[in-house]
Image (cartoon, rainbow, N blue to C red; front, side, top):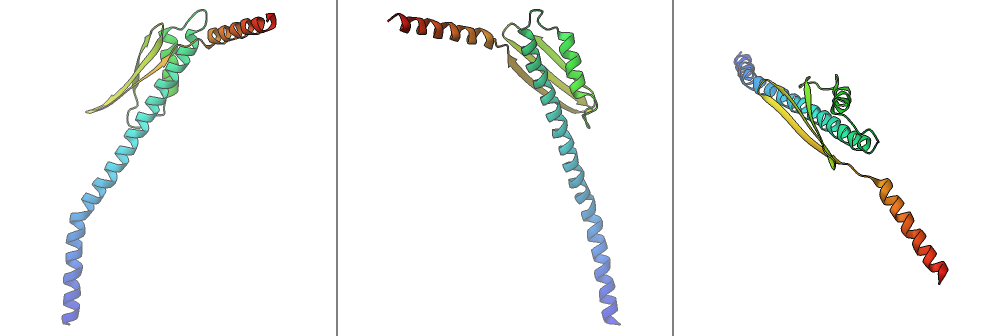
Length: 145
């Protein structure tokens, strides 16, 4: 009979200990889930901002250039229905002659995420043409000697 009493006391103490530990364990699990959602959304916003900047820098080389509204629509398409924690992300786009800068931000309650991505406006066609002209000049000079 004493053995049965001792087992009941142990089982009761285990229940008390688990009632103390379970909220902490659940808090840690929920914190990890929240962190995963946060970094998932941050990566989505970062990728969308970078893709928008790169597309803007590529379109800037075209004859008509690029408009901010076009890049805003492209950014919205990249972010649409992909974020979990921050469903409404906005982008501030600055178009310059030498670079496109996209600042993406989202906020929910006290939590905020902000990402800034830039892409230089390059003109590789000009450099390729210049290189070909130099090669032609060098080949012409070699042929004359």
